[in-house]
Length: 64
Image (cartoon, rainbow, N blue to C red; front, side):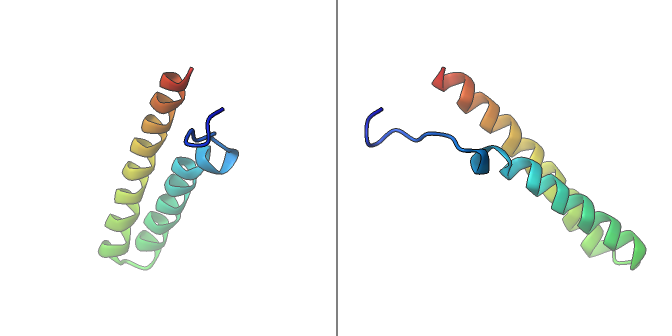
């Protein structure tokens, strides 16, 4: 492996999942607290987490 190549670690692979989990928690907190802004932010984070997971999978496929 060359010095400039990036080896994907477990931390790299869970970033999308982690973002989705945080988003779900924020969404639920927004609902419980009747805070539409927090709910919307949580929904946004869930979507971002999904996109990150998709990108991570595509990068892994390209590396192989």
